[in-house]
Image (cartoon, rainbow, N blue to C red; front, side, top):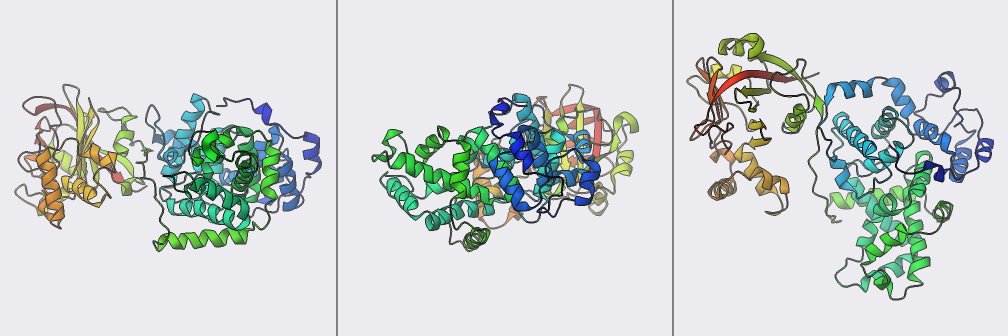
Length: 566
């Protein structure tokens, strides 16, 4: 996975490091099971007599051949892997990942560089991030996760890296990552507060320089400090930072950010009275370029950071909690990034499909509502085994919801529907009366992937968005709407009720099943599950699912899956 020469980062004498270590247990991490460490891993040399001894040794530098051991132990990865020895392999076997692997939504939250990873290493990072999102769905945002995980992959295998990241994410003290955009915003603002209090002359000079640039927010420079560290600092410096952070906590990030500010003030602002003209750019870009071409050693950066007096955990926490309250009260305005849609990975069904390839299940998982991500698909019915009988179809499916219906035509097309309600509800709605909810939708997989959501849901999302052009995702959902349909959607939603939209989601009796209605059926199948039709309907405003000009198709195979609790 490594695209850089790590031997360049072995900056400390091994004997000096080993001399400060001994074979007694590490005592500063409560989540380490000290009684089992020596029993299982006698060859390790990452134990210190006291936390202070460990911190001093790590600050001097960690030998290359012992870094993985240090990170694995102090992150809690060893403990996590002992408790869950098969979780990584199980996920690797059970989850279906898209091919090729697209960028994770976590990557969009913080601009970082991954040029220290090979193409294979980047693919492993993205697979790891998708796996973590599946395991921790309650953590939709974690800006530092991709950057830190990418460096862990330089020194350990995927399984160990997964254990380390999982241990950090499930830690209740939130001592390493910000696991929400609100917390991350508070962290960025806390850095500004610390700079203002602890580095008054530096803070004043930086603001005065930025203020000379018209059109530039003079405080925006302090919202960029994480980018300085993880995108522009040399890789060996970032590795040293993680060494210290893994043993001392996130306070190290603040110290390094303040160190960059001090060095920028000392070596750049004082020598460039014209300020940003030397870089012919904004002050934000000036400090980025200064960080990128920083000529001082990693020891100098760390020494400068540790020389900042007054930065205690109490002060850091005080400002952090204060800024969170200001955000909650609306007194601290921060422009949160538009949340990127996460690439979801989910388990494969218990039986192999005769309609789609395993990798296409990833496309289905990325369509279904978020609340069903924790469920597992099981095959209820397949015409290849159970025959072409609607009665058998109902017998197999009556008690389950939600479900996924898949259809393959004799022309090789593949499409279907997500069904939010049980087919058993047809008994309460005789005469092909419609039932179901707005979570239902139609989709196509072959030859093209497309989702057709309920038009009422799409219009509601449009109304709730801050502006008509803020979300490319909404634009994508509305791509198949005509101008009149879009105008009608806005009018109906602004009328104050979604009841004005078509609610023709599902209908069924002994003669057919229907998904989507209103001026045509989105999907219709006969009692023999052999012949069907598809047309545009008012419920989903979809294109016909089949490419046949008359909207008819002949089924080669029909399958039905239920999403159940594990």
